[in-house]
Amino acid sequence: MLIFLGCRRGLEERAGTMSAETANGPTEDQVEILEYNFNKVHKRPDPTTLCLIAAEAGLSEEETQKWFNKRLAEWRRSEGLPSECRSVTD
Image 1 (cartoon, one colour):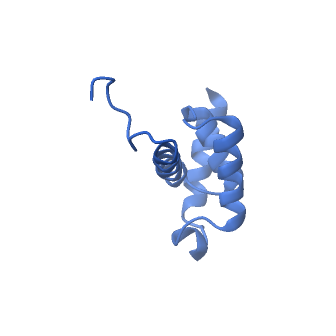
Image 2 (cartoon, helix red, strand yellow):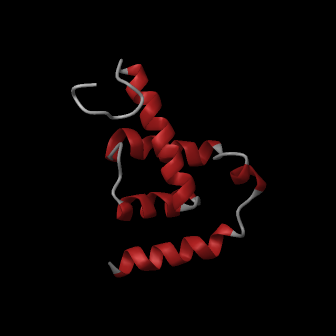
Image 3 (cartoon, rainbow, N blue to C red):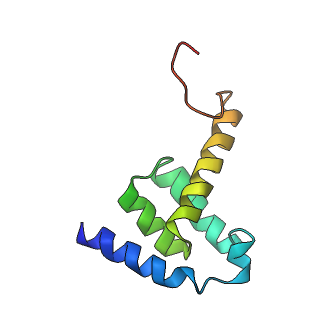
């Protein structure tokens, strides 16, 4: 738990110093890190893992979560699934 809190604090401090590239979306290097984690680690990372991925990519947790949500919807569509999870009866 201490790692998670420390990670969050560090990201919040860096959030004000992000480059203009980050404001327009992740850079190629950031996308590479995000894609690797999406494909090899987990498509729905838990909060601690998300924090670590965000720190590695140099993005905020919110930006990272948004990217994972969009990428998961894209992946689900490519698999012929609805873009959002619903109940089995839908």
